[in-house]
Image 1: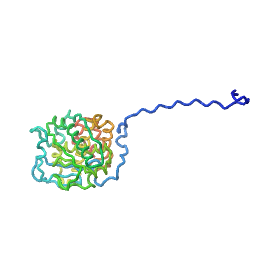
Image 2 (image 1 turned 90 degrees about the vertical axis):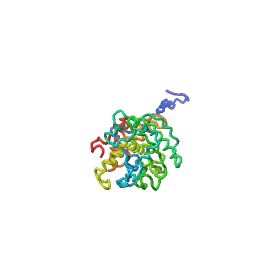
Image 3 (image 1 turned 120 degrees about the horizontal axis):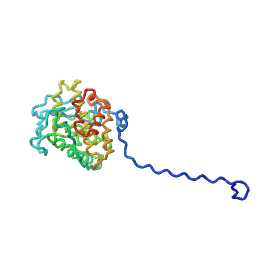
Image 4 (image 1 turned 120 degrees about the vertical axis):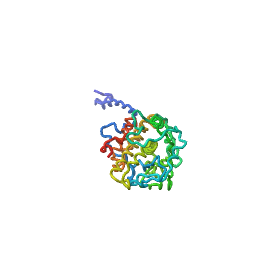
Length: 336
C-alpha cells in the first residue's frame, strides 16, 4: 500500500512507463508503376480536360516524309488531324553534315528494317539536364539538352543498323509554316515532329498547359517525338507512308498503320529511358514515372487503347532492345 503522504489512504498509482517512440520510417524509392498485376489498368494521372483529337495527350502530330522522293508528296497534309506530309520537301537536305557515314542510308522497310534486328539497343548516356522552368528560354535549354542526350543514346543503335544519324532540333515556338506545311492547331497537338526539317515543335504555351513543370511528362513527350525522328532516320516513316491507301488516309487500314507508328514511338521513347535510367539527371524513379505517363491517355483509334499505349512503352522499357518495339509484326489485336 502506498502511504506516502501519511494519511493512511493509498496515494495515486504511479504513471505507466512511457512507450518507446517508434523509429522514423526509412526512405523508400517510388514504387515501380507496373509492379502489380494491375499496372495496365491503373487510374490515369490527373491532367487538364482532354483536348479534342489529341494524339494520346502526351504525343503530337506525326509527320510522314517520303525520304527518297524530291517531288511533291501525293498525300494530303492531314491524316485525321494527326499526320502531316512534307509537300515538295527536298528531304535530301536533312542528310547534310549530320555526322553519319556517307554510305549510311535509311532503309524503307517496316518489320524487316535493320534497326529492328536482334541485339540492337540504345546506349547509355549522361543526361545533364538544366533546371526546368516556365520561360521559353528555360524550356528551350531543357529540351535541347534532352535532345542531345537522345541523339547520344540512339547513335550506336543506328550505326549498328547501318543507318544514318540525323540531328534533330527542338523549337519552342510555333511557325505558321514549316517544311511540313501549315502548323496544326493547339486542339490537334501538344507537340509534333516534322521530318522535312527534322524538328520537334514543342510550343511553350502548349507544353506548359499540358505538363506544367512535371518533368516526367516533358521527358515522355520529347522522347516520344524523338522516337518519330528515329523512325524517320531509319526509313520506317517512309515505308509507312507507302502503306497508306485511302485518299484521306482515314480508312481503318490506314488508322492501323498510324497506331503501329505511334505505339512504336512510345516503345522507342521507353527504350531510351531504360538506357539512361539511374544516371545523370534522369533517376530511375523519374524514368519509371515517364514511362507510366504513356498510359495516362484515353483510348484512341489513331494511338491505340490506353492499355496498349502503356504496354508497348513497357515492352521497350523491359525488353531493352529495338526488336521489342516491332509493332509491325504484332497481331492486329495487340495494336488496337
